[in-house]
Image (cartoon, rainbow, N blue to C red; front, side, top):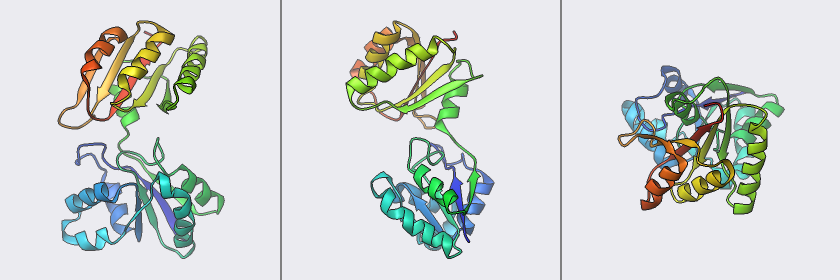
Amino acid sequence: MGTLYIVATPIGNLQDITLRAIKILESVDFIACEDTRTSAILIKHYFKNREKIMLDKLFSYFEQNELQKIPQVLNLLENGKNVAIISESGTPAISDPGFKLIREALGKGFKVESIPGPSSVISALVSSGLPTDKFIFLGFLPKKSGHRDNLLKKLKDSLSLINTTVIIFESPFRLTKTLQEIFSNFGDIDVVIMRELTKIHEERRKDKISKLIEYYKKGVKGEIIILFSTKG
């Protein structure tokens, strides 16, 4: 039987990849990737002498086709093929496709190995200046405002029992709206915005949430992480 490798790839800077990740990607038979275009950039950067061979290993595996692709991957593993799964950036299955495949592979008795590396969650946390002893990661909040508000209310109740840092992914198009909803539930607390981690325009901005709402009204681009803490 083959092995399923969960391979972390850079979240921005292409130099942020482990030697083991490169070795595994080179050795596997197939690479299931969330975005073949992004993965092709990675392949062309690291495997210039074997570019054609490496690109032929790629096949798409994203949220919309995940359920259809799982049987295909399991069949490859059953036939002794080694498969790596990579996301568009960072560690697979963290707010990205992969969890369902990993669960099915384990359930079928296949060997699953994690090849650790970049994670925007951990990178944002350790560089935020907020307490790192414990944290809650919520991923992307629900799209419906009622569901978001309900989640934030429950979060506030939970944080009355445990002091921790909260980490939230957000789209630039919903940033100010989400900040306003956090303000409604938690008041004018200090919030850290991490944007475009490891990229040229990386930004860390900490301020009262009211000031951040005003600042980002003019619009913003890039991948965004919101962090705040009840611990001070």
